[in-house]
Amino acid sequence: MNSLARRRYSKSAPVILVLALLMALTALGFAASASTAEASTTSASDIEEGEKLFAANCASCHGLDAQGTDGVAPSLVGVGAAAVDFQVGTGRMPMQQSGPQVQEKQVQFSQEEILQLAAFVASLGDGPAIPTPEMVDAALGNPAVGMEIFRTNCAMCHGSVGGGGALTQGKFAPNLWSTSPTHIYEAMLVGPQSMPVFNDANITPENKRNIIAYLEFQQDGSPGGLKLGTIGPVAEGFWGWLVGLGLIIASTIYVGARAS
Amino acid sequence: MSTDEKQHSPSEQHVDGEWVDPGVPYHRPRRSDSDPKAAKRAERQVAALFGVSILGTIATLVVYFTQNQTEDVESIRLVNVLLGISLCFAMLGIGIGAVHWARTLMRDHEMVEERHAMRTSDESREVAIQYLKDGAEDSGLTTNRRTLLKGSLITAVAIAPLAVLVPQIGNMGGDWNVAKFRHTMWAKGTRLARDPDGSLIKASDVTIGSVFHVIPDGLNELEHGKLEEKAKAIVLLIRLDPRDLNLQPGKEDWSFDGIIAYSKICTHVGCPVALYEQQTHHLLCPCHQSTFDVANGAKVVFGPAKRPLPQLPIAVDGEGYIVAQSDFHEPVGPSYWDRLKGGSSPAPSTEEGHA
Image (cartoon, rainbow over all chains, first blue to last red):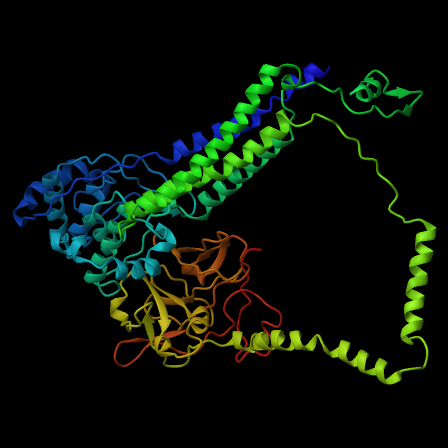
């Protein structure tokens, strides 16, 4: 009877189980995100090429005249080149499948084709243009000012250091560390999907560059060691409760158990 | 050990339905008790653990004196991680070593501690009571003698706590003024300004889909209580397509061409509600997921909040700047006692969220 009981209570089993669970979850957390390519020169003479690309790749949803289809796709008149460069340049468009949120994926076009598409859409109506390399150069921005602006306007969704966070019903604010400076700038200008618009009257072009400098600064890493995904109190609480309490329980079992 | 074995007999559990004390569990001897080799090994293990601690301490000191911490984030992290790991070994080595020592090498003796009644014996009680009686008689407290002494003692003891309590209560005195929750810095004609720099906002700046984080103009110039005023007065300014905005009865002229302003303080427990989803017009509170529908008077569509966010009535002044028409018409933030009593203008806060 006692030998049976002893076999049932393998002392290390709960500890190993907790550790295995933690490792699995940590591995999940490191699921990587894709990076995006970038180029910067625009040319207005590409409108014709862009129109062909649009007819072949976008018109099935947005319509040949880019007026959109009710309930399927919005009108693209007046969204500007910045919106096209962001949506197509991050692989969100053309959309692969519907869902709570259109997600980043492999970019489907070359940068040249993206610029041609952008030139065509920009020719349909006035909208925000693609920023110049100087406008998004993190080296010219002030990360300290950027932090203040980011904390007030962005941190509630994207997290205090841009790690991203959850929204409602499957939507989420993405992590910003692998997003190119141009795409960050364009996202503020056009407000893609759930994100509100931050026009140049709200956040000046200079402050947009400061925000980019602040986000760039996060690439240096965290001085405190393990970042736990920096998605806020959920991850930290999870580690505190599971790892912290798990270790306390494990050591209690160890101290209280008899030696062999 | 012999007593242990005598007490142990797992077969007798119940005799005629009566519960019998099963005694302490079977005593299993440790390997280190019977095998001198195992004991020697355990001794070496304990010594090795203490050795780990010694190395950890030395490593901590070496890291402290050799690693130069610069402004560089990478070097700060390196120093922190190295210090943390070596300190961990320094402390853990002692702890685990001591526990291992006690478990493997110290006397393997099981002890039974009997529980006794807590009550002291009658004799001891009588003696104690007699001491108290003698003392009381000696001091004269129970008789009519020494009234001056008694009076001064009672007064001294009675007022002594005031020396601690008065400063303590006095320091928090101001916060008992609940009335100040009813009013914020907003007043007729106060211009809306950007948080944090305080620059003013023109109606033309607020394009459709925009969100501005707003403080009252003049907040940054306050000398006292700036944070307190900000915590009450912060506002979220949003512009929707006017076709999407359902104006609420009695508040038709509180917004301007789709530009609408709500208090940023959740009516649940007061977190800043600022996660605005442009497409659904939903405003999400990050603390407990209360969701407000900006297009429909910020009524609650999900979560624990019970009331819509208070709306700030706004207008546009002669120079094109957005101004407040008045203060909020109801107290902002979570509910509290007397919330709706004696406010400046009784608010039409009848639209309760889904409960």
